[in-house]
Length: 364
Image 1: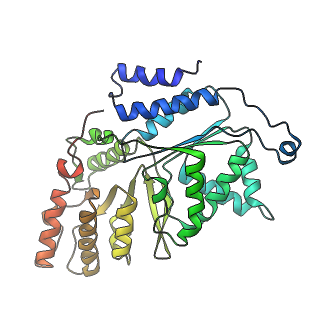
Image 2: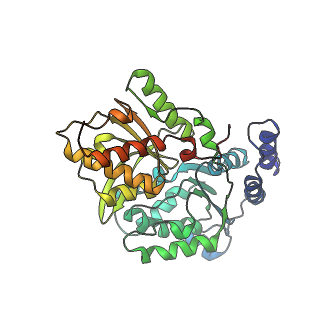
Image 3: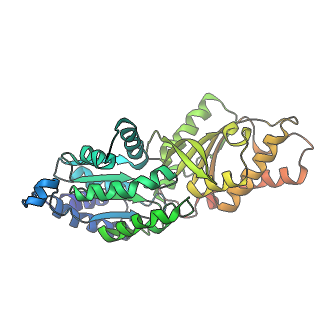
Protein backbone atom coordinates (compact mmCIF):
# COMPACT_ATOMS: atom_id res chain seq x y z
CA UNK A 1 0.00 0.00 0.00
CA UNK A 2 1.48 3.36 -0.97
CA UNK A 3 1.44 6.53 1.04
CA UNK A 4 -1.17 7.95 -1.34
CA UNK A 5 -3.68 5.18 -0.57
CA UNK A 6 -5.85 7.37 1.68
CA UNK A 7 -6.36 10.28 -0.68
CA UNK A 8 -6.84 7.79 -3.50
CA UNK A 9 -9.53 5.95 -1.51
CA UNK A 10 -11.29 9.24 -0.76
CA UNK A 11 -11.19 10.27 -4.43
CA UNK A 12 -12.58 6.90 -5.53
CA UNK A 13 -15.54 7.25 -3.16
CA UNK A 14 -16.32 10.67 -4.63
CA UNK A 15 -15.92 9.40 -8.20
CA UNK A 16 -18.23 6.45 -7.53
CA UNK A 17 -20.91 8.68 -5.99
CA UNK A 18 -20.59 7.18 -2.52
CA UNK A 19 -19.50 10.62 -1.29
CA UNK A 20 -20.34 14.04 -2.66
CA UNK A 21 -17.59 16.42 -3.70
CA UNK A 22 -17.00 18.73 -0.75
CA UNK A 23 -14.13 21.24 -0.72
CA UNK A 24 -14.07 21.45 3.09
CA UNK A 25 -13.78 17.68 3.40
CA UNK A 26 -11.13 17.60 0.68
CA UNK A 27 -9.01 20.14 2.58
CA UNK A 28 -9.08 18.00 5.74
CA UNK A 29 -8.42 14.88 3.63
CA UNK A 30 -5.14 16.40 2.41
CA UNK A 31 -4.11 17.12 6.01
CA UNK A 32 -4.77 13.47 6.85
CA UNK A 33 -2.81 12.44 3.77
CA UNK A 34 0.21 14.36 5.05
CA UNK A 35 -0.07 12.58 8.38
CA UNK A 36 -0.39 9.26 6.55
CA UNK A 37 2.95 9.88 4.84
CA UNK A 38 4.66 10.61 8.16
CA UNK A 39 3.17 7.66 10.04
CA UNK A 40 3.98 5.16 7.32
CA UNK A 41 7.67 5.91 7.73
CA UNK A 42 9.39 3.29 9.94
CA UNK A 43 9.31 4.21 13.62
CA UNK A 44 12.70 5.14 15.04
CA UNK A 45 13.40 4.49 18.69
CA UNK A 46 15.27 7.08 20.72
CA UNK A 47 18.69 5.52 21.23
CA UNK A 48 20.00 7.91 23.88
CA UNK A 49 20.68 6.75 27.41
CA UNK A 50 17.91 8.99 28.76
CA UNK A 51 15.54 7.62 26.14
CA UNK A 52 16.35 4.07 27.15
CA UNK A 53 15.96 4.82 30.84
CA UNK A 54 12.57 6.43 30.40
CA UNK A 55 11.41 4.23 27.50
CA UNK A 56 10.70 7.26 25.34
CA UNK A 57 10.32 6.95 21.61
CA UNK A 58 11.20 9.60 19.08
CA UNK A 59 8.91 12.62 18.92
CA UNK A 60 5.45 11.52 17.74
CA UNK A 61 4.03 12.91 14.52
CA UNK A 62 1.89 16.00 15.05
CA UNK A 63 -1.68 14.89 15.49
CA UNK A 64 -4.92 16.30 14.09
CA UNK A 65 -7.89 17.72 15.98
CA UNK A 66 -10.85 17.91 13.56
CA UNK A 67 -13.85 19.90 14.74
CA UNK A 68 -17.10 21.12 13.18
CA UNK A 69 -20.88 20.79 13.28
CA UNK A 70 -22.50 17.37 13.39
CA UNK A 71 -22.89 15.36 10.19
CA UNK A 72 -20.14 17.12 8.23
CA UNK A 73 -18.05 13.99 7.69
CA UNK A 74 -15.47 14.19 10.51
CA UNK A 75 -15.89 10.58 11.60
CA UNK A 76 -16.08 9.34 8.01
CA UNK A 77 -12.75 10.98 7.17
CA UNK A 78 -11.05 9.71 10.31
CA UNK A 79 -12.30 6.17 9.75
CA UNK A 80 -11.22 6.18 6.10
CA UNK A 81 -7.80 7.46 7.14
CA UNK A 82 -7.56 4.79 9.85
CA UNK A 83 -8.60 1.89 7.61
CA UNK A 84 -6.18 2.86 4.83
CA UNK A 85 -3.18 3.53 7.06
CA UNK A 86 -0.54 0.88 6.40
CA UNK A 87 0.62 0.38 9.98
CA UNK A 88 -0.60 -2.12 12.56
CA UNK A 89 0.25 -0.07 15.67
CA UNK A 90 -3.02 1.84 15.64
CA UNK A 91 -6.30 1.94 17.53
CA UNK A 92 -9.69 3.60 16.95
CA UNK A 93 -12.22 4.03 19.80
CA UNK A 94 -15.06 6.36 20.81
CA UNK A 95 -13.88 8.95 23.32
CA UNK A 96 -16.37 8.02 26.04
CA UNK A 97 -15.60 4.31 25.72
CA UNK A 98 -11.91 5.22 25.97
CA UNK A 99 -12.46 7.22 29.16
CA UNK A 100 -14.52 4.41 30.71
CA UNK A 101 -11.59 2.11 30.02
CA UNK A 102 -9.18 4.59 31.60
CA UNK A 103 -11.32 4.98 34.73
CA UNK A 104 -11.57 1.21 34.98
CA UNK A 105 -7.77 0.98 34.91
CA UNK A 106 -7.52 3.68 37.58
CA UNK A 107 -9.78 1.63 39.84
CA UNK A 108 -7.80 -1.53 39.19
CA UNK A 109 -4.34 -0.02 39.64
CA UNK A 110 -3.14 1.21 42.99
CA UNK A 111 -0.01 2.99 44.13
CA UNK A 112 2.12 5.74 42.67
CA UNK A 113 2.20 6.98 39.06
CA UNK A 114 -1.12 5.40 38.08
CA UNK A 115 -1.33 7.64 34.99
CA UNK A 116 2.10 6.45 33.88
CA UNK A 117 1.10 2.82 34.26
CA UNK A 118 -2.11 3.41 32.29
CA UNK A 119 -0.14 5.17 29.56
CA UNK A 120 2.36 2.28 29.44
CA UNK A 121 -0.53 -0.15 28.96
CA UNK A 122 -2.26 1.96 26.30
CA UNK A 123 0.93 2.82 24.39
CA UNK A 124 2.20 -0.74 24.13
CA UNK A 125 2.71 -1.36 20.39
CA UNK A 126 0.75 1.82 19.60
CA UNK A 127 1.78 4.74 17.40
CA UNK A 128 -1.64 6.15 16.52
CA UNK A 129 -4.74 6.62 18.69
CA UNK A 130 -7.96 7.79 16.98
CA UNK A 131 -10.64 9.11 19.35
CA UNK A 132 -14.10 9.87 17.97
CA UNK A 133 -16.31 12.60 19.43
CA UNK A 134 -14.17 14.17 22.12
CA UNK A 135 -16.45 15.99 24.52
CA UNK A 136 -15.59 16.74 28.13
CA UNK A 137 -18.65 17.04 30.37
CA UNK A 138 -17.50 15.20 33.48
CA UNK A 139 -15.05 16.61 36.03
CA UNK A 140 -13.39 13.20 36.45
CA UNK A 141 -12.57 13.15 32.72
CA UNK A 142 -11.40 16.76 32.79
CA UNK A 143 -8.98 16.17 35.65
CA UNK A 144 -7.29 13.14 34.09
CA UNK A 145 -7.22 13.69 30.32
CA UNK A 146 -4.46 16.33 30.33
CA UNK A 147 -1.96 14.26 32.31
CA UNK A 148 -2.79 11.14 30.31
CA UNK A 149 -2.36 12.95 26.99
CA UNK A 150 1.08 14.21 28.01
CA UNK A 151 2.06 10.71 29.13
CA UNK A 152 0.97 9.24 25.79
CA UNK A 153 2.90 11.92 23.90
CA UNK A 154 6.00 11.04 25.92
CA UNK A 155 5.58 7.46 24.75
CA UNK A 156 5.45 8.45 21.09
CA UNK A 157 1.69 8.14 20.50
CA UNK A 158 0.09 10.41 17.89
CA UNK A 159 -3.53 11.44 18.43
CA UNK A 160 -6.22 12.09 15.84
CA UNK A 161 -9.57 13.12 17.25
CA UNK A 162 -12.92 14.47 16.13
CA UNK A 163 -15.10 16.84 18.10
CA UNK A 164 -18.11 19.07 17.59
CA UNK A 165 -16.28 21.77 19.54
CA UNK A 166 -13.01 23.67 19.13
CA UNK A 167 -10.55 22.97 21.96
CA UNK A 168 -11.41 26.20 23.79
CA UNK A 169 -15.04 25.10 24.17
CA UNK A 170 -14.26 21.74 25.74
CA UNK A 171 -15.49 21.74 29.35
CA UNK A 172 -16.12 25.50 29.03
CA UNK A 173 -18.64 25.74 31.91
CA UNK A 174 -17.22 22.92 34.02
CA UNK A 175 -16.11 23.01 37.63
CA UNK A 176 -12.48 24.00 38.19
CA UNK A 177 -12.25 25.01 34.53
CA UNK A 178 -8.95 26.78 35.17
CA UNK A 179 -7.27 23.44 35.88
CA UNK A 180 -8.31 22.30 32.39
CA UNK A 181 -6.69 25.19 30.50
CA UNK A 182 -3.16 23.65 30.33
CA UNK A 183 -4.64 20.70 28.42
CA UNK A 184 -6.19 23.05 25.85
CA UNK A 185 -2.86 24.80 25.45
CA UNK A 186 -1.11 21.42 25.03
CA UNK A 187 -3.60 20.40 22.33
CA UNK A 188 -2.92 23.61 20.43
CA UNK A 189 0.83 23.13 20.77
CA UNK A 190 1.03 19.47 19.73
CA UNK A 191 -1.84 19.07 17.25
CA UNK A 192 -3.01 20.73 14.07
CA UNK A 193 -6.48 22.05 14.93
CA UNK A 194 -8.60 21.97 11.80
CA UNK A 195 -12.21 23.04 11.35
CA UNK A 196 -14.47 21.18 8.91
CA UNK A 197 -16.84 24.03 7.99
CA UNK A 198 -18.98 22.25 5.39
CA UNK A 199 -22.46 23.86 5.20
CA UNK A 200 -24.14 20.49 4.69
CA UNK A 201 -25.25 18.09 7.42
CA UNK A 202 -25.00 14.86 5.43
CA UNK A 203 -26.70 12.68 8.02
CA UNK A 204 -29.92 14.65 7.65
CA UNK A 205 -30.27 13.36 4.10
CA UNK A 206 -30.97 9.95 5.58
CA UNK A 207 -34.06 11.19 7.40
CA UNK A 208 -35.44 13.27 4.55
CA UNK A 209 -39.20 12.70 4.22
CA UNK A 210 -39.20 10.49 7.34
CA UNK A 211 -41.48 11.23 10.28
CA UNK A 212 -39.64 12.33 13.41
CA UNK A 213 -42.75 12.26 15.66
CA UNK A 214 -44.05 8.70 15.52
CA UNK A 215 -47.40 7.60 16.97
CA UNK A 216 -48.89 5.38 18.21
CA UNK A 217 -46.15 3.23 19.78
CA UNK A 218 -46.74 0.21 17.55
CA UNK A 219 -44.08 -2.35 16.71
CA UNK A 220 -43.81 -0.82 13.24
CA UNK A 221 -43.23 2.66 14.63
CA UNK A 222 -40.70 1.33 17.12
CA UNK A 223 -38.73 -0.09 14.20
CA UNK A 224 -38.94 3.27 12.39
CA UNK A 225 -37.85 5.10 15.56
CA UNK A 226 -34.81 2.82 15.91
CA UNK A 227 -33.98 3.36 12.23
CA UNK A 228 -33.93 7.12 12.83
CA UNK A 229 -31.36 6.55 15.56
CA UNK A 230 -29.21 4.39 13.27
CA UNK A 231 -29.47 6.93 10.44
CA UNK A 232 -28.32 9.82 12.61
CA UNK A 233 -25.57 7.93 14.46
CA UNK A 234 -24.01 5.98 11.58
CA UNK A 235 -25.39 2.78 13.10
CA UNK A 236 -23.81 3.27 16.52
CA UNK A 237 -25.49 1.48 19.40
CA UNK A 238 -24.50 4.28 21.78
CA UNK A 239 -22.88 4.48 25.21
CA UNK A 240 -24.04 5.96 28.48
CA UNK A 241 -22.31 9.05 29.80
CA UNK A 242 -22.53 11.50 32.68
CA UNK A 243 -23.29 15.21 32.49
CA UNK A 244 -22.02 17.52 35.21
CA UNK A 245 -24.83 19.99 36.07
CA UNK A 246 -24.24 22.53 38.85
CA UNK A 247 -22.07 20.04 40.70
CA UNK A 248 -24.54 17.18 40.26
CA UNK A 249 -24.10 14.17 38.01
CA UNK A 250 -26.89 13.31 35.58
CA UNK A 251 -26.71 9.98 33.76
CA UNK A 252 -27.56 10.02 30.06
CA UNK A 253 -28.62 6.46 29.07
CA UNK A 254 -27.49 6.39 25.43
CA UNK A 255 -25.30 8.77 23.45
CA UNK A 256 -23.73 8.67 19.98
CA UNK A 257 -22.77 11.32 17.42
CA UNK A 258 -24.39 14.24 19.26
CA UNK A 259 -27.62 12.28 19.74
CA UNK A 260 -28.95 11.31 23.17
CA UNK A 261 -31.81 8.91 23.95
CA UNK A 262 -34.13 9.04 26.97
CA UNK A 263 -37.52 7.75 27.97
CA UNK A 264 -40.20 10.32 28.74
CA UNK A 265 -40.09 9.45 32.43
CA UNK A 266 -36.31 9.83 32.58
CA UNK A 267 -36.80 13.40 31.36
CA UNK A 268 -40.11 14.41 32.92
CA UNK A 269 -40.88 11.86 35.62
CA UNK A 270 -37.81 12.72 37.67
CA UNK A 271 -37.06 16.02 39.43
CA UNK A 272 -35.37 17.79 36.52
CA UNK A 273 -35.41 21.55 36.12
CA UNK A 274 -34.23 24.30 33.75
CA UNK A 275 -30.47 23.68 34.34
CA UNK A 276 -30.89 19.99 33.43
CA UNK A 277 -32.78 20.65 30.20
CA UNK A 278 -30.41 23.45 29.23
CA UNK A 279 -27.37 21.20 29.83
CA UNK A 280 -28.92 18.48 27.64
CA UNK A 281 -29.69 21.01 24.91
CA UNK A 282 -26.11 22.31 24.99
CA UNK A 283 -24.56 18.85 24.95
CA UNK A 284 -26.64 17.15 22.22
CA UNK A 285 -27.90 18.23 18.81
CA UNK A 286 -30.74 15.68 18.71
CA UNK A 287 -32.71 14.19 21.60
CA UNK A 288 -34.67 10.95 21.17
CA UNK A 289 -37.67 10.59 23.50
CA UNK A 290 -39.49 7.26 23.74
CA UNK A 291 -42.49 6.27 25.85
CA UNK A 292 -44.31 9.60 25.46
CA UNK A 293 -47.74 8.96 27.02
CA UNK A 294 -51.08 10.71 26.83
CA UNK A 295 -50.75 12.88 29.92
CA UNK A 296 -53.36 12.69 32.66
CA UNK A 297 -54.74 15.50 34.82
CA UNK A 298 -53.13 13.84 37.83
CA UNK A 299 -49.65 14.14 36.26
CA UNK A 300 -49.27 17.83 37.06
CA UNK A 301 -45.52 17.68 37.64
CA UNK A 302 -44.88 15.69 34.48
CA UNK A 303 -46.99 18.16 32.46
CA UNK A 304 -45.07 21.16 33.83
CA UNK A 305 -41.71 19.54 33.18
CA UNK A 306 -42.68 18.52 29.66
CA UNK A 307 -43.75 22.09 28.81
CA UNK A 308 -40.52 23.45 30.30
CA UNK A 309 -38.40 20.88 28.45
CA UNK A 310 -39.95 21.62 25.05
CA UNK A 311 -39.61 25.38 25.64
CA UNK A 312 -35.92 24.90 26.49
CA UNK A 313 -35.23 22.64 23.50
CA UNK A 314 -37.14 24.98 21.21
CA UNK A 315 -35.17 28.05 22.31
CA UNK A 316 -31.91 26.10 21.89
CA UNK A 317 -32.81 24.83 18.40
CA UNK A 318 -32.59 21.20 19.56
CA UNK A 319 -33.96 18.52 17.25
CA UNK A 320 -36.24 15.94 18.83
CA UNK A 321 -37.40 12.51 17.66
CA UNK A 322 -40.41 11.22 19.59
CA UNK A 323 -42.15 7.86 19.94
CA UNK A 324 -45.55 8.63 21.46
CA UNK A 325 -48.91 7.09 22.25
CA UNK A 326 -50.79 9.96 20.59
CA UNK A 327 -50.32 12.89 18.17
CA UNK A 328 -49.32 16.27 19.64
CA UNK A 329 -52.91 17.55 19.69
CA UNK A 330 -53.95 14.70 22.00
CA UNK A 331 -51.03 14.67 24.47
CA UNK A 332 -52.38 17.07 27.08
CA UNK A 333 -55.40 16.53 29.30
CA UNK A 334 -58.34 18.68 28.25
CA UNK A 335 -58.54 22.08 29.92
CA UNK A 336 -55.15 22.00 31.65
CA UNK A 337 -52.40 24.58 31.09
CA UNK A 338 -54.46 26.01 28.23
CA UNK A 339 -52.07 28.59 26.76
CA UNK A 340 -48.89 26.72 27.66
CA UNK A 341 -50.17 23.43 26.27
CA UNK A 342 -51.29 25.05 23.00
CA UNK A 343 -47.87 26.69 22.64
CA UNK A 344 -46.12 23.38 23.32
CA UNK A 345 -48.27 21.55 20.75
CA UNK A 346 -47.49 24.25 18.19
CA UNK A 347 -43.78 23.98 18.90
CA UNK A 348 -43.84 20.18 18.71
CA UNK A 349 -45.34 20.45 15.23
CA UNK A 350 -42.82 23.05 14.11
CA UNK A 351 -39.96 20.90 15.44
CA UNK A 352 -40.97 18.15 13.00
CA UNK A 353 -40.55 20.38 9.95
CA UNK A 354 -37.78 20.17 7.36
CA UNK A 355 -36.88 23.80 8.07
CA UNK A 356 -36.35 22.92 11.75
CA UNK A 357 -34.21 19.87 11.06
CA UNK A 358 -32.17 21.69 8.45
CA UNK A 359 -32.99 23.49 5.27
CA UNK A 360 -30.00 22.16 3.31
CA UNK A 361 -30.56 18.44 3.74
CA UNK A 362 -29.26 16.22 0.95
CA UNK A 363 -29.35 12.56 0.02
CA UNK A 364 -26.25 10.57 0.95
